[in-house]
Structures are given as structure tokens and as C-alpha cells.
Length: 83
Image (cartoon, rainbow, N blue to C red):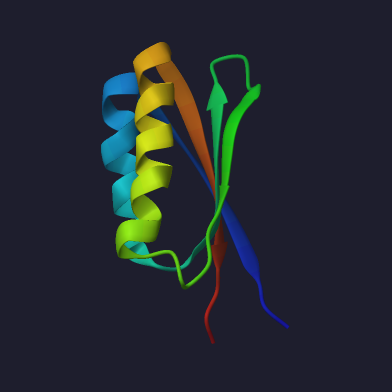
């Protein structure tokens, strides 16, 4: 049985794309959810081990579009413990 840890990060729109890129490169993330300052879900990205390279590019583009529209948000992530 696997364990799933959840974390949240508060970032500005300017920091959003960079933080999501960092999280994707970590490789142990199951899901990234971006919420506005009122905690409404704006974008939810399910990630698997196959999300690399060119497959991640459209996701980053979507995150960039969101970042252009918001000033403050929360990134909620679900980590997958690999044992």
C-alpha cells in the first residue's frame, strides 16, 4: 500500500510556472492542483511517471495562461511515496 502526502505552497502568479516546473522535475508528484486566493480550483494536473519532456510542455503552457490571470494562488500537491 502506498502513502500519499499533501503539501500546499502559496505563490504569486509570477512564481507559479517556475514552482510547477520544479515540482514536475521532482518526479514523485501524483497531482498538482492550482487554487485561487478563495481556494477555488482553477486547474488540476494529474501526473504520472510518463509526464516528461514534450508531454509536460502543454501542461506548463496551461499553467502559464493561468499565471497571467491571477496575482496570488495556492499550489496543492499530492506526493506519492515510492518505497
